[in-house]
Image 1 (cartoon, each protein chain N blue to C red):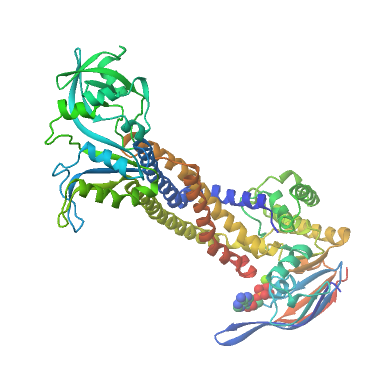
Image 2 (cartoon, each protein chain N blue to C red):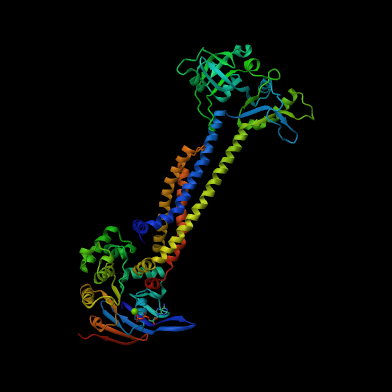
Length: 409
Length: 228
Ligand SMILES: Nc1ncnc2c1ncn2[C@@H]1O[C@H](COP(=O)(O)OP(=O)(O)O)[C@@H](O)[C@H]1O
Ligand SMILES: [Mg+2]
């Protein structure tokens, strides 16, 4: 039986002898492998963005906002009829055991000014539960006090981006900024959080007490109105199982008769994220599968050239057989050659794929992320393609009759 | 007996008929003999030789090589016999192109599973025996016909195969080179004791052998010792 090293040498020599042809033959595999790597990287990048998004949002979240759900389940326009109050959130937190925290949220984009500097950013009226739910700490300063909430004090906690834009190197603590012309005292600065997976700057924000937002900054239609309530359930399962309780509690609080539709919408963010994660997974598999079709096409290209190679080298096969090559000696020789072709194509494909991923990250809005598994997968697939599509030519070669092969011109 | 053939027939189908090439050949060749097979072109010399060399199998008849019933072997069994017991020298040299003389000579040992270092050593020795050590890194297209044939002979003897089959080995060579090659065969036979079975249609070449078997129209016409 021929040894691996000799057979590899023979294969490498055959590939080198026809450099141009080898490159063209491997082209299908090169394109296939790089396409699979790029597609998997895009899918994988989307998954990671989503996971980061979930992490930054907080876990086990439910949002309850105003809006009509008809009995058929169709939703009305976004916040069409304001109906949610901060006290609804308190009731949910107090009465429903599966809900740990309920943070009221009222938000609006506004101009803020410090000295000569001004900046447009998102203002969020809320209370300290918002920070607990999001697991977001202060860099320095303090959170809202009970008095701040009770008295609707004009105090503000800033995100890092706002600090950088308005204050530069100046210590913002205790300074007065103006939000829509109203003076606020800065009491704290949040830890830098960076961008969300979707590319939103989480640090470009200002927090003020919910009561201050309701009474002094934002226009509301009825007392205690909020835009939505952010709920945190005790665990992921409870985001599903608590929904009936939330619904009946809110229907009761909003005095909705039996025939009336809900005037609120419950959105289970955990469920939404799980669904999105599922769909990015499916997208990844789909993209990868489509790209691997080109790998199969590449395999057919290899089979083609290997068949040509076997025909061209019929005499060589005859010589080898006359000298004592057995069936599998001949088979391995050609299998190795097609394996070398496909693996060289695979290596080139990896390099081009990685380059493509770099280009995508530089010049497009996609985040593509590679990992070792998603590189080795198409690479080993290319090896398999080489063996599978190389087998028929190798089989054909091994079945040649030594005399006919020797006589072949 | 090294080679024992009884009533061997070979026929090819042709337009629904049977084209009989060998019509019942029986012969025995002992170890160490130097035999020439002669006969007119198309008489079936190469066909017989391919059967004796285990490249082909007869339509009927029995063939024992060194006591082995060759008819019972499959393709891999035949390959194994060719590898261990037989060396071939062809009219057209049949060396691998773009492959050095050394690597060509190593080839039988590659399929015998001999380790690389030992292969190299034996191949160099074989090339030395045929007087081509200085040319061992040359490729076939850098060698003359006579030199190529000597590489082929080195390849045939390197595995210490007891039998060498040579089908018109001088057919592509001029008379000077032919004499050199025949001298080499004679030395291999006399000095190393290799059995040599040579196909030729030239009287001058056949004269180097000790025994001449004449084939005419697929049958043995005569089988005589050569008187020198
Ligand atoms: N595969 C084959 N199919 C049909 N006829 C063949 C085949 N091989 C050889 N022959 C015929 O057998 C005859 C003997 O051929 P061969 O043994 O090569 O003769 P030679 O004595 O010249 O070496 C020739 O007539 C040749 O045409
Ligand atoms: Mg002939």
